[in-house]
Length: 325
Image 1 (cartoon, rainbow, N blue to C red):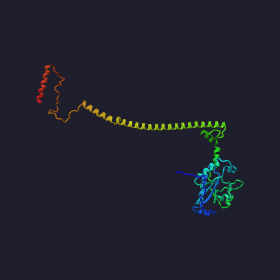
Image 2: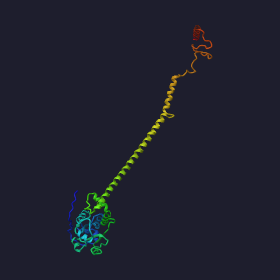
Image 3: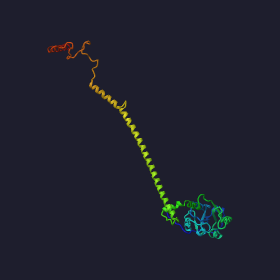
Image 4: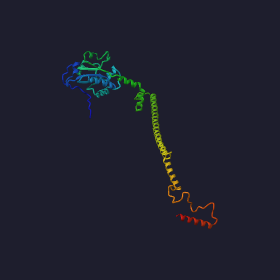
């Protein structure tokens, strides 16, 4: 979307200009007859206070056309003082304000009937504080007496004088900043000694900024290390608990290792000492008073005196067994 601005604007009103009262203007006027409101000023270092005053002037009536008069440099320097912005810059700043319908260049310091008639002005908008200048206690006195004055409210805390005061108060800071940005000492009207002082202060500020950045990075690094250490300790604690739990589960009093050892010990004992036959097994017709003895057990009281005797005893034992069968 493109925006086009005209350096010269004028009212397109074709209807005859008839004087209006404030009551009539508040009720509204035909589309081809907007209420023509005039606001003037220096508008140096155009700021939000200026814009709010113009917004009030534009919205005083339902259908209005706002003309803004801007005084020239010669007139301003004569009656008020030196400006930061020249007249061309001030005209251009007003031309880009959304509430302004027409910019009147080289506006008069005091409004004359001829000027009001030329521009078909219905009302003049300005704050109600008496504005003494050009040998008058209030340059808007005759406008108020004619019933053409409509007051607006000033915005507290912002003005051109306030902005200039801040610059003067912090002159060293702004001078150092512009030196750092490439402006010369001559352009800034700074002496040789002050230039060296400002440049040295800029170097000191750079060193302070570097130290501050290192401190911040060190703090950030320490914080990250502490955070990582905390995570590692927490993970180590979890793993150690898990390890101890597994160890106790395997080697504890009721652990799996003990049960396995007991089972293996039982199997080994079974392998080395098999179980005896139960007592309830049949005795094959033997008398309870006589317990059989193996055939190879000899009588210790009467050992065989000779091999012949031993063979005779073995044959007798075998015969006895045959008898039992």
